[in-house]
Length: 455
Image (cartoon, rainbow, N blue to C red; front, side, top):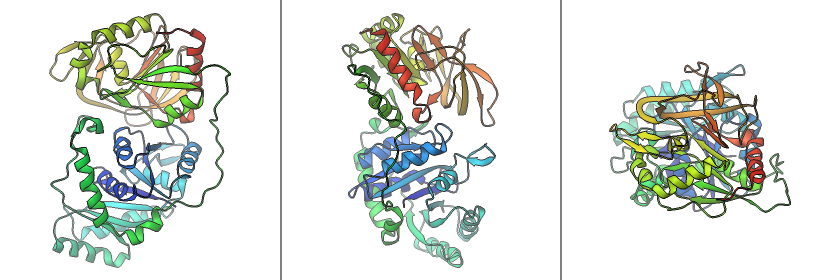
């Protein structure tokens, strides 16, 4: 078994609760998971546990992949926690399911109990009604207990306990208001771990809080993994008989949004992953045959990226001479002509895409279905993929011959076009998880093997 940590809504303290529990369990070996298309929360999980966090998202992959991913990555550990997304039942209407890809959907797929986190800062007796409603809403979901977060005083706790007593629902954690533990955030959520110099001190406080704020006698059996059984690997490595393909991956404070499963697939298929920094390095890595730019925060480091002229020139030359390149979201922004930052200042970027990006206050968010309109290093024409957009910027120009025709799954689900395919470059705002589409990394590596171009 393992445990799903869910909230009654966003902002109730799921991540704080999860990090407290992970900090306590990491001494024994714990694997974490995150529901949905998230990059930053998994960074914090990995920082605490020392293990890559795995995303569980049946839209970006499929339900079978979610089950196999969970089974595979709990085989080597004794404990596992799944952090939910938004409120417990918040998902999308898809395949005749109104809460598809919600935390509840994942709990049903994996047959796991739920620990419900409730923000009690403005509650007393009403906490009983909230807990009762969530427990009875879907009989397929087992609520193992609740965590009372942001409890103000002993008297406040007494009122909450009295309201929950008739439900016979265990209180498995009580977190008092914590003014001295703050994880900074900004326009796309929490600030990534690499940018928080005081993070070790924060984690130490969370570990202390985790040890003293939870009923571990009741929790340990709930978070302990079930006995292991063989797991088929539908994404086994494909022997090629060739030397590994050297793929340069931009990894620094500006580019940090990568799904670990994508990187694993590349290595299983024969890639040698070469991390490097467009911020700090003065040249591309030696003898690479392809480039991979994940998302991140290039807008926060636009001046440093602009000032690294040798790297910008080397990248421009490599891409113009048709080195296979994949760039998503922040990577796309970096390959444009300019980034216009929050202050309205323009900073020159690589310049292979004939557009600039302007940082905006408006948020573009949601799942996307995308049909490839042309061949690229990752996709053949007419292939359909599912991805996710999450950004506060927009392009000054749209491509005349776009990469994708898209539509959404939510209220922003209007049809449109998106993405660039130039030279051997595939660039898009859409984040892809390759777990449900193993042909994508296979084609990407194949495109590098065929070109044989070296930097």
